[in-house]
Length: 292
Image 1 (cartoon, rainbow, N blue to C red):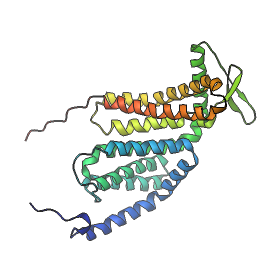
Image 2 (image 1 turned 180 degrees about the vertical axis):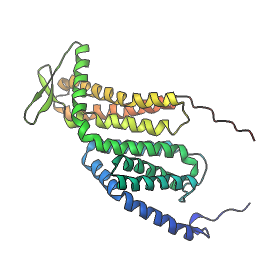
Image 3 (image 1 turned 90 degrees about the vertical axis):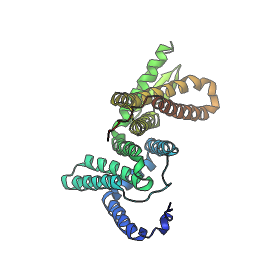
Image 4 (image 1 turned 45 degrees about the vertical axis):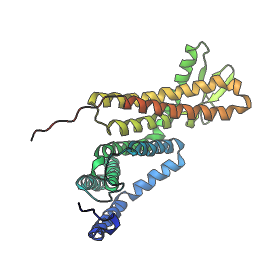
């Protein structure tokens, strides 16, 4: 059996490298500004950066047991070409028709094409999941300024509701100029700040759900249930985080900040781990059998 030479020494590699470099140079021209904007949004907004970290680590753990194949493909196969061509078409139409949603779709397709180019044709399902999750990440970055205040109010009301269930009701109100959302419990005021809106938790759960359910051969109903459940799970987890911080504050004393961070980290990773466990337990559909 003839053993193929290493990738870098393949006889036709130089002739194939030039078209690939030109293709990615074109992608940089088409998507460079959008990608730079996404990087800036993640850098200046902690919740957006949390969503990006979840997406990156989720993809790494998903691919760590990838069966067979070379570690790196670094070539445009049929599927990578399809994703890439669709991404460029979306970008061109977005510019011509002034439709930002087409650029969102294009960025997702570009992410999928990169994964297929780097790892090969056998990662189609993870590429689809990554494409949808990256498009979702782009939408989340765009919607963050609009979602901040409604999510803060929802988090504060949920925490107050949990407190009332425990027989220790709190009061939610506004104070100051500009207005700040304040939750008062046992005479102690707690500000429901932007960092407490749960955006990172909710978006992280949603992106992880998209990445996982489309990377496995699940039933359509199971996919829909997980995608709908994920943001609800994030919202509830954030409300529980606020509730725990409020209840533990009197005992924490001067260690309040350390307790605040410890509770946040524990619930963040605990919620994501629970979601991963939930999806991993869903049965996969049997592949279709073709007769030849």
